[in-house]
Image (cartoon, rainbow, N blue to C red; front, side, top):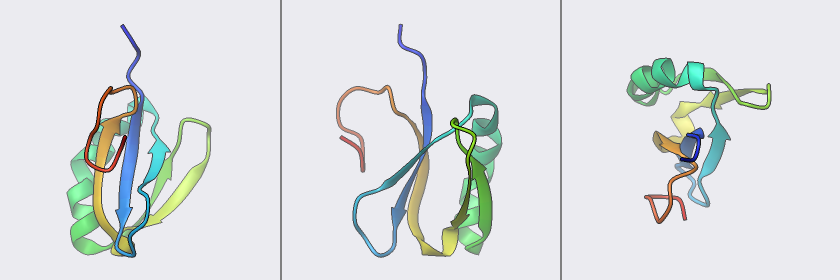
Length: 80
């Protein structure tokens, strides 16, 4: 069975392709629980990626955000 590869998927207000940030497994639950608050308040939050980078996301410019598994097969909203 394939290993889960969680990622933060961001659809920007300006359109275009979604941005994908692979997440560390230990950060998924906390970020997932607070994602709706970041969107509601348009906050700027730091997100740590699996490759050790820290990305600052300005949620005021994000139209939709969710956490998805990059290993999932088939089409998902915003991903192919």
